[in-house]
Length: 332
Image (cartoon, rainbow, N blue to C red; front, side):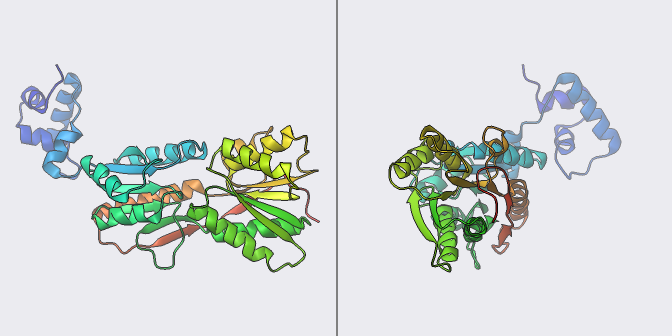
């Protein structure tokens, strides 16, 4: 039989309310009482039932971690950082896959069924309406990897995707490329649109440079490979800014199958700096996204929202940097 709070109270010779206070954060309990209760609990192998406690406190400490792209290995790192970070703060992550979801109202209803205390939308492919729907339902929400805004309607943490596009364009210009391409993820993703916007805007300042734009079906290796295979069947550009490392991996695979040498024949620049990008067999030049800082900031925000749900929405933007490896030719 699983030991209960009543069993601990009887073993320690105290009331059940005393046992409950010993396992309630911030409750007033004498040192002598706590030692007695903890000793009895250890002897019985008792652990407090947080779900049962939530019926009394009306707080589950469950945080819905909403994601829409489980096929991108970049998010394995994101999941790892989020789950560990939330658990270290006494919060419990509830991973939710909304890859095929199109109705924000249905998502709100689903998360309410689990009585989550808050939601972190860790996605740039889900429309902003999803995060706004949670806030409208009075559920504290943070949109991680969301679109930068000067006056956000929900808390947003991420990078300036337009500026990343500008960085990519400037990097190509510095290396003497005059015919370049952008290979993004789905056109509906805000990150894709913003990265292309920044890339194109910067290149328009240089009339001697030609730029093309192509969208992959998803932020995935197969989608990147498929899109690049089609581009190589035509007249390809000298270099491509792939707006995600996993798309870059697919593109590199297609290039090598076509017998092209990277970066001698064609160049590739990625974005994210996921672990695999640094592998010797990949050696991808990419734009580093400070994922750990973004995740920690998102957790800090959701934690503060649980204490102060009326906190005014803010946007936190983190700087990116180029990581030089071996898929672009040297600077001129």
